[in-house]
Image 1 (spheres, helix red, strand yellow):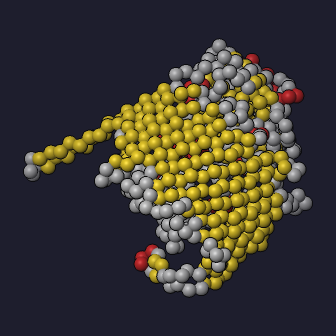
Image 2: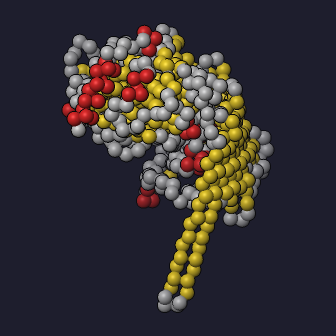
Image 3: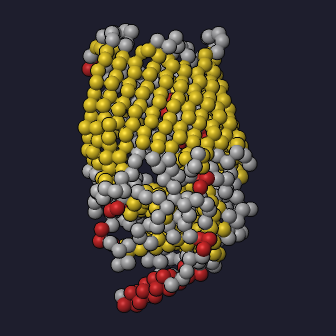
Length: 600
């Protein structure tokens, strides 16, 4: 025990007296650089960071706050080093803390949010395209979370990589030691530099700090603002082949009738990396037995509900198929709730409109990137009950400028009908993280057309959106139109024959002169839905009279809504209740408070 303490003390002291190179210090703007050092064999992943091999790498650090303040040093020191061998990339993080007993660490489960806890986020842009990559996070309990980033948007937790990490709470703070096998990642073997960023949250203060580009409007997954990880020479990916067969069976015996029955099934999933940036997946007799069931919802509107995709085969690389801006406000609804329009919705493959399983005999998918192009192709053969049906989806987009893109999407077929249906559309996104003095600007423009075999002509939908935000301001405006007969059978449409106008403006002042108030939010939002002749159908106005966020991380606020609705016919909701046609006009007031989740 004494020997362990001695080695640990020696390691920390040696680290503390090693200066950080100027280019490896955190930045408010710009790209700091940290060099990864090749070693013969990586360290033992135990979380202590006492392995002397870490001393071969130069430390980096000097984190700057991005919340609640900007461009000031993080209140607690954070430093890290990066090494690698033939098999893995290793990252060691020293989270020094003067209040170790007050660490906030509640989560224990994989892929659960640790946003309000002490945590570390690591971002890797393995192709250095400043758009795509991977994110990893871990809290002092060792609870891990990972995900993929597509076009500077967080793609969710669907990507699950094989990586290991250990943490230790020590008397000087807490430490993180990660090992990410190279075969887990897709990367360009010819590049010796990756995009890299690391963020730290101090839970008890609600304080966020970052190594590269610590502006509030920049998120930890914005690969466009990451720093550089250099020195990655001679990396090899390996074969890149995963084969997962399955066999399931059920045996039933009736002893009274001396009768028995054996039911079985088998299938296989294959994943192969065609190139470092292009992946093929094939599934024969696809098994979704372990897929999480849908959360129950009660529909109190006259529009269909939206249920998210949860099947792993379709979730993997799903960001490639995102169209018109994955987070587009112009296709979402504040008053009626949920997604308004998705030209491709993967739940239409292998599930009928009641959510019941339709067997998938074969499904194949190719996704990835070729130079400046992003490619996604999906084809599936589905058992429709009265015969096999083939469905196809194709997506191609090209990167423009630093963060923008233009693309095309098509779907062909309908797993719920033998009647042929086709969808085609083009979209353009312009994005900048440094507009008008450092604000983030995102705009989306798209148009779509559908054609069904038993109908003549095309039915269309289109949308345009612009969003501008930074630390103190959040503005957005959008217009969307969906035709009366617009029918993407492989997609999702909440409402047809609608034109939607949306506008939102929020100001977020920070109250540095008041010690117990962090910031407040005040704003106005309006959504107007009309028919295609611009006759108003329903409206929702929201007045955020004040949401106050305290330094304790508690909050209180008051929001007032004014809503109108004019259903032209009766409709039914839960338990057979009828809402008569007519004109409705009402006000809602919501006084709310939240208790901070940061307490240890």
